[in-house]
Image (cartoon, rainbow, N blue to C red; front, side, top):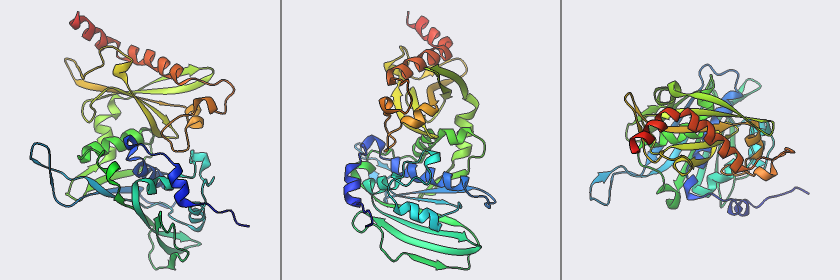
Length: 347
C-alpha cells in the first residue's frame, strides 16, 4: 500500500511567524542557487527575482502617497530544472535527495503557508531531449495528476517559480522599499555571497526599479568583512564581522545553518553603547555579525527559523547561551576601539 500524506494537515502543522514572512521567498531563492550548483552545462548562472507590487500607490498615516505592498514574487533561474528525478523528489514529503546540502525536504510546504498558489514552469533537458513541465501547486488541490510535460524544440534550460496571493498578515510585515528587500535576501543568504562562484542575482519590481545583489553586496558588505574562529567543546565556529554604512537600522548577530541565516539577536541587549549607529571620524556604521559552523548545520529545526541545540547529534552539546556569550567576547574585541571612544565621551 502506498503511503500518503494530507497536504493541508502538513501545512497546518508548520509554524511561520509573521517575523519570518519572507522565508518562503528565501527558500525559493536558495533552491535556485542549489539548482545552479548542480548544473554543469550552464554558460552563465543567473537568477532573477521579480517582486510585483499591488497596482497603484497607497496613502500612509500622514496622507502622503507611498509604494504599495509586494503581492507576488517570481524567481527564475537557468539551472537543471524539474527533471524527472527532481520532480519525484518534489512530490515526496521529507525527501532526502538534497540532504547533503542541509535540505529538510519540506521547504515547499512553507510556500502554501504564506501564498495562495505556486505556479511552476520548467524547461529542462534529459538524454539530450528538451521538455517543458508546468503545473500549479495549491493547498486545495495539491498537484493535478495530469502534469503538463511535453517535448519542445527549445534548447535552453529555464525554471520559473511564481509565488502568488501573498497572505495579508504576512504581506503587511514586509518593508516597502526594494532596497530593504535586497538587504534581507543578502543577509539570509550571506554565506553564498561570501564564497566565490555565487550566481548573478538580479532583483527588480514592477515599478522599473532594479538592484544587482552581487554588486550591492560588494558595495556595502564585502570590503568590511573580517573573520574570527571560535572553538567551543571541540566544535569550530566562524564569526564574520561586518560594518554596514547603509541598509541596516541596528547592530545584530545572525546565526546561520547550511549557508543561510536562521536566527538573529539585537546586540544592544548584550553590549553597552550599541544602542545607536556608531559614528567615527571616517565613517558611520552598524555592526552585523554572522556565525556559521557544522554544529549549527546539524542543529537547525525543520522549518529553519530555530535551533534545537539539545538535539544536535553530538555528544557534547552546546547551549545557545554559551555560543552567544563567546561571540560577544569577540565582537566586543573587534569593536573595542570605537566602543571605548563612546564610553569615554559619555563619561
